[in-house]
Structures are given as C-alpha cells and as structure tokens.
Amino acid sequence: MRRKDESKKLQLLEFINSYIGQHSASPSVREISSGTGIHPATVHRYLVAMDEAGEIEYDGKSIDTAATQKMTPVNCMRVLGRVACGPGDEEQEEVLEYIRMPENLVGKGTFFALIAKGDSMIDAGIHEGDYVIVRQTQTAEIGDIVVALYDNLSNLKVLGYDAEKEQYCLRSCNPDKKKYADMYVTDLQVQGVAVGVYHKF
Image 1 (cartoon, rainbow, N blue to C red):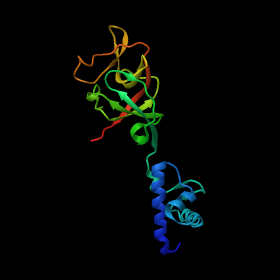
Image 2 (tube, rainbow, N blue to C red):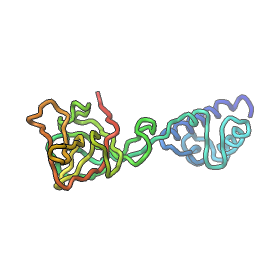
Image 3 (tube, rainbow, N blue to C red):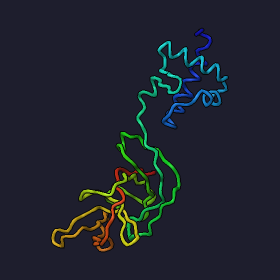
Image 4 (cartoon, rainbow, N blue to C red):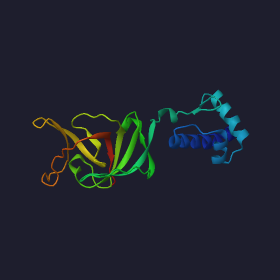
C-alpha cells in the first residue's frame, strides 16, 4: 500500500481492536465500514493487503492483530439482582444488566453477579452495593463463600460445619456475633461460590 494510506490502516486497526475488546469477536466488513465510514470494498481490500503484509491475520471472517492477540478473554455475565448479606431474603432472578470480567481474574466457567445487600460479610471485604462475582455450581467446600438457598430464601454466607452438631451451617463475616450468629438450616442448596468482588470507591 502507498504511504499516504497509512492513516486509513491506522483507522481500521483502531476500530478492530476496540470492537474485539468490547465484543470478544471480530467485526464483519460491514461493521468496520459502518464504524469507520470506509466503503466495504475498500475495507476488504485493505484487510487482504494487511494480511499479506503480515500486519494482521485475516481469513475472510476472523481478524487478529498484534493488540488483540495480547487481550485476555473475558466472561460476560448477568447481574441477577441483589443478594442478602444479613437475614435471608426472597430469591430473585431479574437480569439488571450485563457485565464483563477478564478470565484471568475470575477463571473459566459459568458466572453470574449479584449486588450485595446488608453488612454481614464486611470482614470478607463485601459491602453494601458491591458486585459479587459468583461461579455457578451446586457444590462447595467448607470455608467457601456461597450463595445459599433455603426455605425459599437466598443469602450470601460462608459455608461452615459444626462437628459437635454434625450439621452444616452458614456463617457471617461480621464482628457482631450476637446479631449474626451461625445459621443452621435444612434443605440447604448451593447456587454458586463467590470468586471475587467489585467494590466501588
């Protein structure tokens, strides 16, 4: 390509990198054209020429650039309402929004997020209004912070076990032990294990 076209190549690269960063997928020629104002035929011609020059990898559908190859995969997850961090609350599953978290922070799997409500988990760093990132699973280890369902109530607590009573329990992370004593429940169901929390300053 002629040197006078370098600005157009840069425009294409900036759009492609931004699109893949937001969508975790390559844009189509028409999407690139719409986003840059460059005619679709010109977009295609540039992509082919840039691939031949080794500046990108383009197979007619997917596009890889030097920048996108360094991008961390992301997990897109639903924010399913609020979860009680205190007395149990009625289970709710209403999609409030979608958020994206880098895979290197949360790991692989199926995730959802909940907004913390209450102060029973403050010693675990979970405060009112925080986004709690949860890996969807029905099993958990003792000491895991779980989204627990019991008696049609949902709660965020540490999964514990009382050896004397030989019974599982749900434990708060709050220094006020009188207000937040261990909870012994029957028919306990684990809906997920917390893997992270997003705290807004």
